[in-house]
Image 1: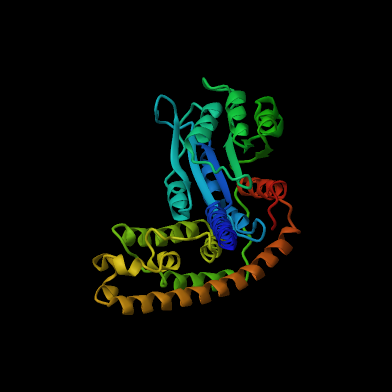
Image 2 (image 1 turned 120 degrees about the vertical axis):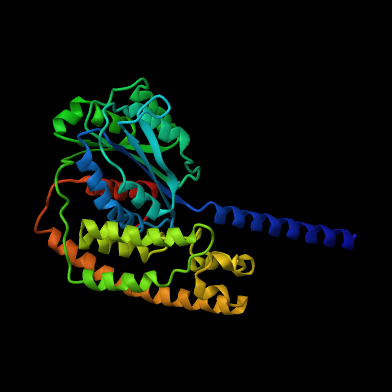
Length: 373
């Protein structure tokens, strides 16, 4: 009898441990996500809006990286759509530029080749497509946001915007509208109504206004850190070399806007959200310690191709440590930079632009969803 009881106890403990392990694995897999889909009107009058999107991408990313959920960093994904394009896609003028992705260099790359020149702006249709075609998370704590920006009446197209928004709300997606023009016009043309129905925020901005940048005494030093940071990347795989080259192209694109925008990008690159496991061996090794054993060394930079596995591992670890040191330095400079910007901003409370509208609403929704910042 005692043996039977002992067996039952052991069996119960084993089952309980297995259940706890499975629960832990599920919780680890269910990392909270912040998912942001940006739907841009690319009709003929919206080049200014596109320029603001280019100018504010890294600032928006840096706002997202301030958020934590129960002390943990969420996974950040961004998607891009254009509507009002000059080209027809599947019977309309809407194109998914990128799916929800963590590849921030890809988002930047696509923004910098985007141009205005179309006409038909189907708000309901693009909202419906983003709702249906993007891979939205199903974790209750996920923060799912759609931002649609444009200037024409919201009722255009075959898909009623009210029905499209109802579908989005059914997936716990907040719809935010950014009207490029006078506030009264945005209200009259249903931009405010769309935001109310979508549980989101309504903004109006001047899309042709130049974005105001605040240069700081720390920007040059941050720029210098970026040069050292880029040297810690080791490309691998068939796309590694081109991806690393694109990293530098996006540095140049950010710098072409302003030195302040460049500094914003470098700050983003110092954070965990900027991860390039698909082409950078250092990032890949941080999540998979066995990668060196299976890597094709012919696709590495020449200076690494003839190294043994042990030598390559040592080189990767050295770059990893070097990167951590540089990132820490950037983080310290970024804190001083932000304090300077906050102080200067008090002197000039300028009007909304695309980035400011998105940033303010992100922080507002973060409170609702239980995120800290």
